[in-house]
Image (cartoon, rainbow over all chains, first blue to last red; front, side, top):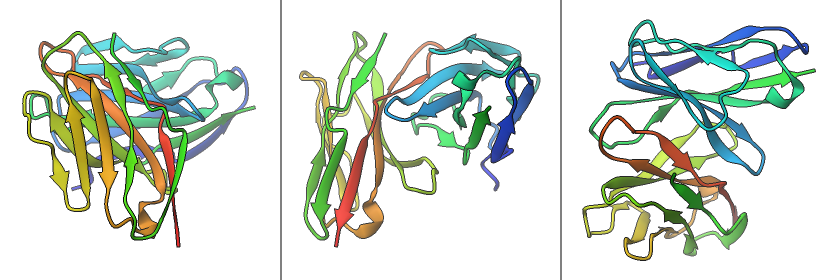
Length: 113
Length: 116
């Protein structure tokens, strides 16, 4: 059972480039979220989804897009990378209703130069 | 909106001793979950313990236990018999229960160092 798989683990982008961070889970979880982690800031919610075809914005959505075409996948797109998007990104998933919290991927360290 | 506050940016403890990490939260909801996550240097987020707000009994998981004070909106984590492997960043998190809102809100974290 792979859990939540994020790719890539590390990425360096130039300012203005676009890219997609991939996230896949094999636990049939309905809820999926993207967080960014910055020093001294904890984890902040970027976007989340409560099921296929349904997404919503979190606390810091600007500069990011998401879509949820299947239950398993929840990619995060950076449209035009900026140095302020240098961060560690986590994808997480949860089964609605069991209150067991979220299972996290291993994270992607993104540097924008 | 819910907020989670961890007032101790850093703490240290000697191996085998007990340490308590503080967490307070603000919410108008009555039905919710609280969590403590551990993030070791490997960066992986690991669920340590969870508490359901409607349960008065404090949750325990081996050496980890919580002191949940619902009226005071306080949710502290006690680590007994601290081990070197407990060195990590610890995050307190809140999740509302009900409707379609199952978002996690995190505090800023407490860096715990266990000294030999």
